[in-house]
Length: 117
Image 1: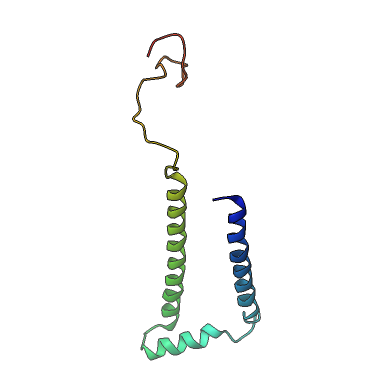
Image 2 (image 1 turned 180 degrees about the horizontal axis):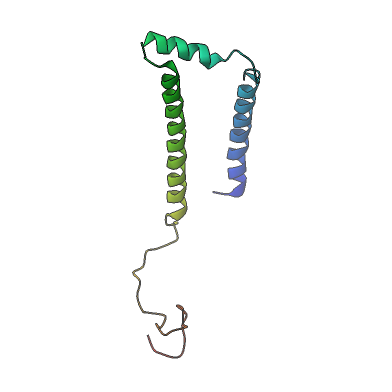
């Protein structure tokens, strides 16, 4: 893919992501307020499900979101590693062998004149 094509694809995606983050940041509740949008819903849901401990219920819900985030980061890192380590179109697999280099100490894989491979 050419660099110009990458830029054409990246620019609208980055602008859309910036707009989404901006819109989400504008809808955040005020910092330090006594009303929190999740608090009232969490207590109501915990009481509706008749949980014995509403605090533990909320804690486990938050941990579930945290675990989901960690798993998505792990998935993205495995995907990125797979994409970086794959063979390119012009690469070929070769079996390792002794042809082209000697195994003498100090050679380190270069062709040298000390021995015939």
